[in-house]
Length: 429
Image (cartoon, rainbow, N blue to C red; front, side):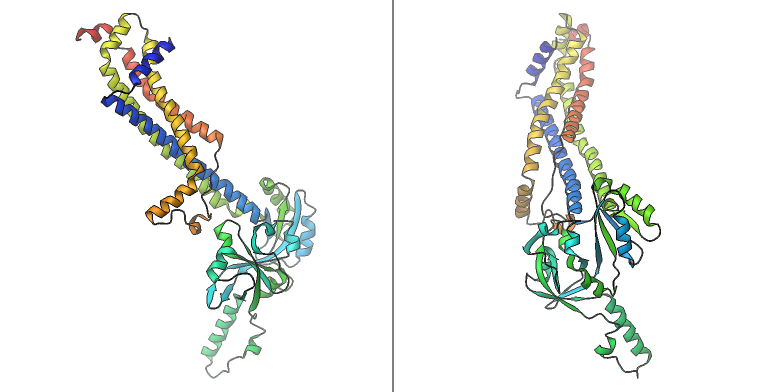
């Protein structure tokens, strides 16, 4: 029964020089474009989420332990952390904004003071170093690639780092002089107790993490140097913690908070990037439903085609019913047409979508050259290339949804065609 209905449906779908055939081709093209765009966008959004997680996990600790100010007795806290199940390694750090100057080029990056030997247990930063090496002995620094380009420095150059706390000391001195114009200005030697002297650091390495926010804003320095710049003495800003399973960091954080009490608190890598992850997930879901309307529009084209066929084939439908064709056979003639359109739309959509996902960056570069604009600015999206990850489950959901929409669109005219009275259908022929 269905083979008869399918053969008749394929006969009706054969290309002819009629308006109906053009609408059929447009309907297939609509389904193709809808599936192509859905696969491309969902794959890119998934790629963004997964790549961001990989970049964050490759560069940030799983848990950070800190408090509202600084950690004074951080060595005692460090010992307590190692007693907590799930904690693999810890490392002290100092982090804050500074002023970097190189031959008049001034930037305001973040410095992160670390002990490389201990930091290696948290993240292997050596894998990101593209020029020079991870050498933080003495007055040295390892700088992000984008920041190095902005400052115009390379390995072996020296940059001057100014502590931000100096601004407050200078402002206080200016206010003192304004309040008492006859007061003698302090000399550099007299200010030395209040002002942290600038540090001249030698660039020993340039790293490239693949994420713009790190590469354009981070300078690694020795821990002792960070402590000097922020006048911390032996204190630190926090402790980096690596867990045995990054996606179970929340449980370790809760254990840390219970053990340390009021002395310090923990925050996971998900907590520190929650807004970004939530935004990507929300955009991904919204884009799926918005782009699904492209397939729905194509389904209206299928419905329009089949309604037109129903009107044109009224006589044939009447003859089929008169010679004994059942209602289900007539329904399947038109339902099969919608399914065939959905099937071919799926096949071509998957092929085109996968091709665009595979060649997305080449297409982006070509489009940028043709239009003369920057299509994917790294400073906005934080990636140098468009990430993408094809998830079979997502592709299956897209294809099944498109096929069902096309089939439902065909069901309405099919039902009306099957209910035609053969006597009325043949009366006016």
